[in-house]
Length: 48
Image 1 (tube, rainbow, N blue to C red):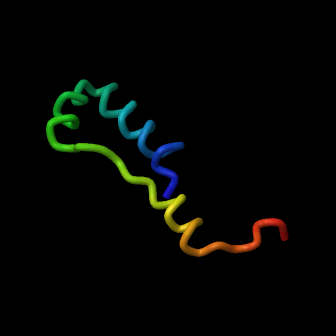
Image 2 (cartoon, one colour):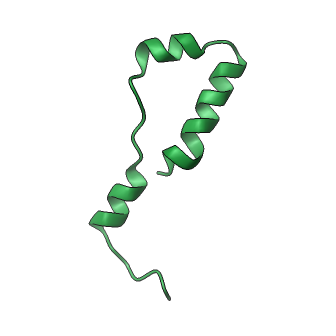
């Protein structure tokens, strides 16, 4: 969960830091974030 806000940028930044961003781009088409999917599929009352 939360790939777009945290994990994705962290992973890309670290891969770029070690000089392997071009390698990552060759094998990864993109990222998916399951957090919005789960929030829409399993609504809960967040005001508690």
